[in-house]
Image: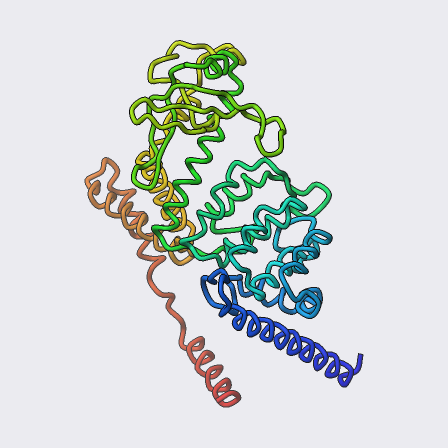
Length: 418
């Protein structure tokens, strides 16, 4: 290819990149105007980067598909329809390392701005789990931190499945697992996620940890037939988790009033039954999940699991906790571990110079020890060794002819190179 052709090609690339930037900036400006409307969900962070990784943002903006989305998809309904037909997985990059369809549509949705009502519809959409998934990604990247929990709370145990990774064998996940992982991590498949305000992040971490323990506890309860029979006995005395705005979540003594096996809205059989319980201490009645109930302290201390024929393992016994105070301590412990790991990762590697210094230090230590032990049974050997070291350390003496040759060589080099 000639030089002129290369220049033309380079000019065409720059022209396409400039065109892509103009399309994106126009979409951002339109979104900022729309944000003045009533009911629009506030955007957290810069309105022209949306907390995207710079490389991911640049590649997505320059994607021809994203430019097409900006030109063709002009409102929330159009984007939702496009997600329904086109999105097959949620990771940021496709197999060829180009921006994925999901993230192109996510960025388009961020430039459009959504209202609170549209976000609620997105997260509860029944046509495609990917519509919901992109809604959760929207919240994770740019949702107002103080409103995040109210949007995600009801989905932490959702069992609907979706694909996260690209490819025929892409990783599958439930909505609940996806949400818990997304809002408890700072990385999503190689691209960084924004850090929330520390107290908000910690509160969400505690609630997600509570949800994880509830899910694990429900699984272990369901595997134990004897325990399930007791839980499903009306009038059985158990303990259940409860908390409200004024009181942290903790365990209270409760009594089983009713067992629910079907979803009251759809009529479908529930994976795990729910329980209507009364708390005698306060007299209130609540509906709780299987993971939010447990045996009273010491009630089944010697019980053997009917599924495995042995007592609960230490890991299972650890699931019986769940007070918010305990969970806060667990979150703080994990934070400390993360900081320690990051310090270790960022530690400067040992260079050759440092290794040589360490070896030299060890050499001095050995020499010092030899000095301390100079009154040895074999002083002649020590003296001989010391003499050899002195010979090796002293500079080599040169003859007059060698010195003259070196001086002549230096003169010629200076004359040639200055």
